[in-house]
Amino acid sequence: MKTEELDYHLPPELIAQHPAERRDESRLLVLDRAAGTLRCDVFRNIADYLRAGDCIALNRTRVIRARLRGHKPTGGEVEVFLLHEDAPGDWVALVRPSARVKPGTRVAFADGAVQATVEEPLPEGRRRVRFDAPDVLAILESVGEVPLPPYIHRDHQEPLDGERYQTVFAQTPGAVAAPTAGLHFTPEVFQSLDRAHVQRAYLTLHVGYGTFRPIQTENVADHTLEPEEFDLPSESADHLNQTRATAGRVIAVGTTCTRVLETQYRDGAYHPGHGQTAHYIYPPYNFRGVDILQTNFHLPKSSLLALVCAFAGKDFALEAYRYAVEQRFRFYSYGDVMLIL
Image 1 (cartoon, rainbow, N blue to C red):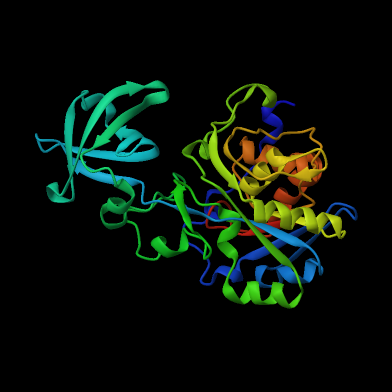
Image 2 (cartoon, rainbow, N blue to C red; image 1 turned 90 degrees about the horizontal axis):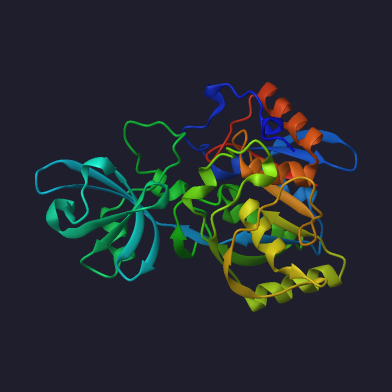
C-alpha cells in the first residue's frame, strides 16, 4: 500500500481548535461495515449502537504537563518538552532552540524554583535533561503546561485545556498526548451504558509524541512506530475473555486501546501483561481482539489513519472521511468522533 493512498483533503477551518461545549455533544459518525452505510448522530447516544453483554475498553493514561518554559543563565528562553523518563529525574526531551543550548547548560524554571541540566544530543533531535529533583511529575503539576498538539494554534493556553485535554477517567500519569477517542465520555454517558448493560474494562497505554509523526516512507509497510509503555491488568483481561465467551463484542475506544488489545490477544484469548508495544497496524490486517472501533478523525498519511483503514476497509474509511468533510465535522484531538460497527 502506498502512503499517498492515505491522503485526503481537509479544509484547515475543520481542525478543531477548542473542544465542544460539552464532551458528549460531539458529533458521532456511525459506520456500519456490514450494510455499508453512514449515519450522523451525537455522542451521548453511543449506547444506542451497543448491546447488553458488550464491553468497552478504555485507556486510563493521564496526560502529564510535559511542556516547560525556562531560561538559561544568560536570560535566553528555553522550551523543554518532556517525552519519557528513563530514571528518576532523568528525561528524554525536545529542547528548543536546541542548537543554542550546549551540553551542560543549566536551565531554570518557575523563577528558579526548578533547575535542570540539558545534556548530550540524542537521535531524532532529542536531548537528555536531568532535573535536580527526582519527582518531576509532582513538579509538572505546578509549573508545566498541557502539551496541546501542534495543529492546535493558540497564542496562549486556556484554563479549560487542563481539564478538557484529559479524559474523565484518566488515572495513571505518563502520556504526552491524550487518547482522544476517550475525551467524549461523561458520567451521564457511562450511566446510559450501565443502563444498557454494557460493561467496561480499563488498560493503560502512555501515548507518546510519535503519535503525531506522519508516515514519510513511500510504502506504508516501511514505516515504524515508536515503542509505547502499556499495561493490561489481569482483571481487565479476564473481563474481556468473559465478554467473548458470552458472545459479547469488544469495543476499543481509540487506536491506543486497539494496539494494546491486538498486542495481547493470542491463541484465542486476551493475556494480561505490561511492557512496550510498537505494534503497527495497516491494511491488510486481520483483527482478532477488537470487534468495534471508536475513534476520532486523524491526520492524512498517519499511522492512525492506516489503522482505521485496516479496520473499516480503505475505500469505506476514506468515503467516510470525505462525507465528514462535506458535513463539516470537526477533526483531530478536540474534534468529533466515529464509531465503526
